[in-house]
Length: 174
Image 1 (cartoon, rainbow, N blue to C red):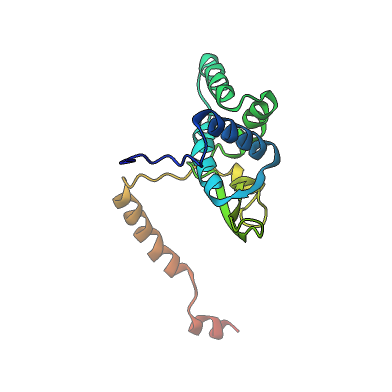
Image 2 (cartoon, one colour; image 1 turned 45 degrees about the vertical axis):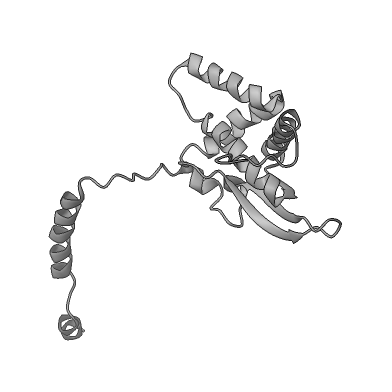
C-alpha cells in the first residue's frame, strides 16, 4: 500500500532516481531549459526549487558557505553550483518562488510518452519580462495600512479635479 506516499518513484530505485534528478538539475542550471517527459519535469521542479531558494541572500559568510555545501551535496557538480550562485541567484532574488515553468510539448512517437519542456522563468524573453524583472524589488503582500492609503487617495482626488479646466473654460479662452 502507498497511503500518503506522494513521491513519484519514476520506476527507479532510490539511488538511480537521485542520480537522475541530480543530472537533470545540473543540466537545467547550465542550459536554462531542457526537454524531458512530463512526469520527470514535475519531479524535477520539486527537486530544484528548494535548491534555488537556498541561493537567496543571507547575512553571514558561514551561512553562505553552508548553503553552497548543501546545494553541492544535491548536485555533485561544481560548475553548476557556481553558475547557480553567481548567475541565477541575482536574477531570482526578487522572486518569491516559482522559479521554473513546465510547457507541454505533445507526445513522443516512439513510446507515446508525454513530453514537456522545463525552463527557468527568468531566462525566457518570450513569456517573461527578461532582465527588467530582476531589477524590480519584491512586492509586499501584507494588507496593513489600507485605511491610510484610502484617506490619502481621497485627499489627492479632489485636488486633481480642481486643477483641470472644464470644457466651457477651454472654449472661452480660444
